[in-house]
Image 1 (cartoon, rainbow, N blue to C red):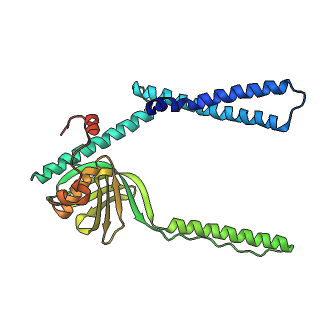
Image 2 (cartoon, one colour):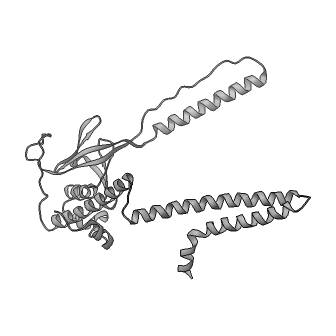
Length: 287
């Protein structure tokens, strides 16, 4: 019964639209043969017409959605859908690489060194990750607003209305300034992110910034969401998110707490293997 209803349910608006159309036709025909048309009968016809229009629109939407589903199953994707699929695949691949990296480090292996020719690293500093990340910082601002006051002459009603308008405008500007000044994630941008054994370097719109592990006060790795959030003793918190965010979480945790933390940290303890569906979608490792 459930399977039958599951097949029929998407198309019940079409049946409802057909029923409303037939009922509207029957009532309309009855009214056409009647000399007197009551308000209730006219209201009934209008209600049936409204139901017909609503259910017809819903049916049309379902048809378009069904065609889109069949098109995607056949592999005919729009440019936007191809980009979304590629992005999902990139995150699956990144998560797989992070799982392999975690196992590699726990087995006593060393991070795979990379080379860069456009950034001067410190002596004996090793580059181990180079990837674009979504960068943002968490802080508030010193927002101000202009308080408007004026002298109004005229009838009492006009004066009271003007004063009320000024008060409402000042309150709106004050609330907007307070909202703008409250701490929130800001400076959202895509940043080239270099991860070394000492720090994280981000090329932002204002220049290249370095975040040393020695200055970190709190770490919030979230490999499942490919996101790392760090708080510092003397700097604003930073959030980094991207397809290589899971690997960043693994590397940062190992640098901050040691490799044993990869098996003990609550955020990384359950980060072991892909689900079967993800393994099929990701394919074999390319490391």
